[in-house]
Image (cartoon, rainbow, N blue to C red; front, side, top):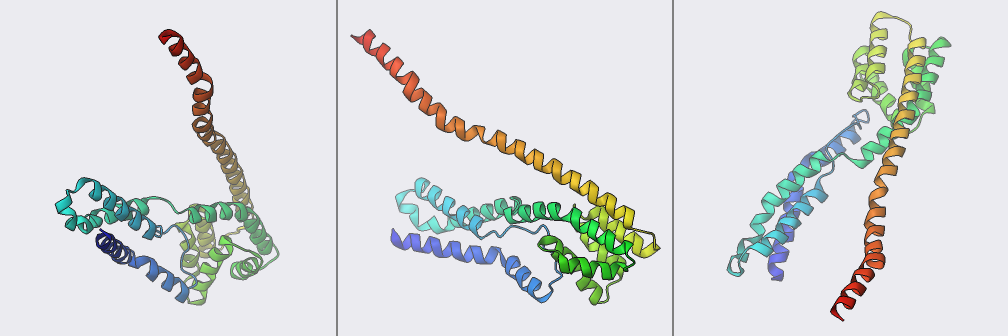
Amino acid sequence: MSIWVLMAMGAAAVLAGALMPGTALQRLHRRADPGTAPGPTPRARAPWVVAGAAAALVVGWLLLPADGLWALPLVLVPGAIAGERVGRRIPDADLRRQQRRRSAELPAILDLLATCLAAGLPLRSAAVAVRDTADGPVRDDLSRVLHRLELGVPDRDAWLVLAENPLWRGIARDLARSVASGTGLVEVLHQAAEDTRRAHHADQLERARTVGVRSVWPLMVCYLPAFLLVGIVPIIGSAVLRLLG
């Protein structure tokens, strides 16, 4: 049976490489273009492809008759495809962490950008100054805009690229509108910073409540069987023994 296992593993590896060419291409594209969006992208699907293929292998091993095991590697195809579909729909944990960090950093960045504009800097120079002091995903966001500006993209279109991210959507549209019309942005940015700060605080509270709710299940899984084994089973056992005796 070892030959069949090796064939199955080889088929799974081939399927994993065949079903995720876009991931490698996206990495190469990001290296060539540092302004490429780091925003929501499909999850790296290799683990899900392999997991789906492995699950199909186990199911096929259990269901196929002994004389039909030669077809075992063939069941990897639907299993790998199903795993790839599942992996595509599960949000990436790294992206969630980046989005939470962006939500925490964005209010201070917006206040700093408004301060630079109030001091008389044009928007592009203010973005450069703020980008140089920022860190994390917000720095990457501003780098995307500045990279496009360096390539000659119109200012309005360069700022609108940030509207792909929900946290930046309204702010990016205000920035693009200001570039096109010349309206002031200081008060708008301060208000956006305050709104973002409140939204981040509300999200933190919601996450704290969610952690509290989720912690109930491990306690139930651990303590309920222990309670049954220690408190209920001995009572029932002793009662049964008395009835039998």
